[in-house]
Amino acid sequence: MMRTTFRGMTSSSSFCTGATRIKKCRNASAAIDTKNRRRRRRTRRTRASKNDDDEEEEESSSLEYTLDRPLLVIVECDGVMIDVQTAGHRVAFNEAFKKLSITSTDWTPTEYATLLRSGGGTAEGMIERYFHFYGYPRADLRDEVVAEENDMESAYEAYLRRQQGANAKEDTFMGGPQAGKSPSVQPPSDELKMRRREFIQQVAETKDETFIEMCREGRLPLRQGALAFMDECLTHSNPDVKVLLVGETGSSPEEGVLSACLTQLGELRAAGVSVAGSPETLAGKDNYEDALYKRIESDKKKKKGELLAPEVGGDLQRQNFNSDVVIDSSMFATSRRSSLTRAAIRTASEREGFDVEFDVIFVGGSNSTCKAASDAGAYSVVVRTSAQRGGEFKDADGVVDGFGSGGGLTMRSLKARMDTRRRTLLDDAA
Image (cartoon, rainbow, N blue to C red):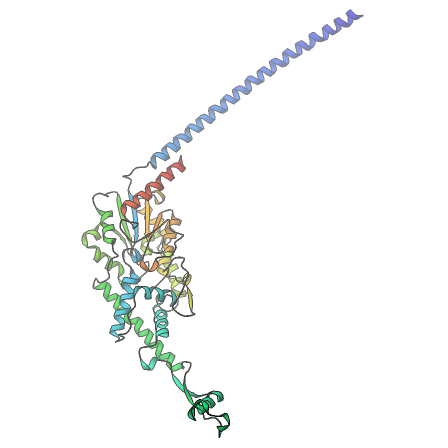
């Protein structure tokens, strides 16, 4: 009985062994197939990785770092090459005052910067603000003064003083208090307001004419160090630097600031730079109509009087002029600067044959223009004027005070900045 059971068990065990072998074979075959599939997948991944490496290597080679790689330096004329405000409009104001025989008025740079902020940024606002505080220079423009009766208490005190001095008794007062007179400033009449408006308009128009004369006669100077910076860009030691000078971002074409700048540069330097007369021409034919339309629409919204101070102090938002009136400088904006868009900067860079992120530096005079350049991918630097000291320019990649060594802008410092930027781009690409 036990043997039969044993044989049965043996027979069952043999059957299981055969089935197990078949199963092992099948598993082995499946393992081989799996191994082959994995090998094929690795092969495909290796090939794909190799192709990616080739593409990355090709891309890296196109972005290969070299000190001799060409650079495009876009320089804003208004504010960077020429301090249009302090060296331009301020001087024109002072000359206009002399032409109109207003000899007691001469605005200092500090006073002018304060008026830019407190006067709302317009020529008319600055003139009105100044003379409202210090007084108008002509008698027919001053506040009207009339006499009015004192109140009863003041009249009674005056009567006692006219008696026997402080020892006089109150009951000696006979006939009631005597009415006295004292001067009182009256609110300006409509006629006075009209005379003041005509005076302010006359000063503003005279200033505008004087400013145009300064530009035409070559009396609008370059900023200190600007000429040396341009020489550094254009000399034979920097054959890999191309300069694009952009005008009319903070001035109008009829004023002639760009022409004055080129005159100061001289014929040889002027021949070595590319010139974009306005943000619209910088944008190129494809973007010209769009930029021009935006400028016209902004002109319609602009209040009367050319806005002089788009961003005098960056984020230095508030400053008063010895009064309770405070103007927020964030309201300052000009249509010219706003038309210098990131599309215009990218188009100009591509037209000149430069990679905007890898090869283009924008040197600007305001936060709005540097923001447009940074948005386009270029490296932007603000060169602050004396009126902008203390202001922050958060949308710019760099901020310097003037030109030259010791913290100012030089071509060597710009190349060092681009050196760091290019290395960062290459590390990110790797």
